[in-house]
Image (cartoon, rainbow, N blue to C red; front, top):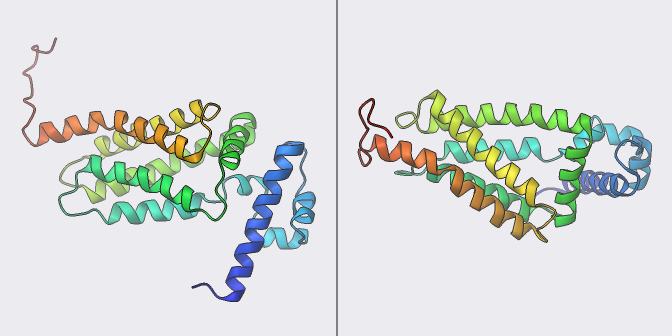
Length: 217
């Protein structure tokens, strides 16, 4: 259990995130200053910089922690677990982490997605983070499943899976009304994206015959 000092730090960090998101929703991302965020959270600007280096960090506040948990999950592949099953468990766990968050709301998820789509600076950072995270996940998947996947297959599986999930969630965020609804959408997209990987696994296991050249229709 976290000590008193650590719990206080967590509350301050969450207060800054909540204050920033409220201001972003009301004033817009570009028109909100760091001083306003700090004041709304009842801390100094100096204290703000003890937790975040800039406004964009507040939008992506959970990225590093989620990556650490994802890599740990991949490293803990269960005996007999296929690569597809491992990735599906990762997606399901990712939604679970969101639902377990200390202050998860559909409105927060919707706002963060809208900010990333509307603000060029945030969109650029999101792309960089996506490439970096997917490279790390592909390497971890390859390491977890060395006998089933080569580097290309691991990278393609991760790219197809998380591209499908993110796009499906972002496309439907205006239609869903809860985080559970978004989870359902994301899991459906994951199942569809993993069909290709399951075909590779089935072929490797000898359940699907490989057609000789020139026989494919």
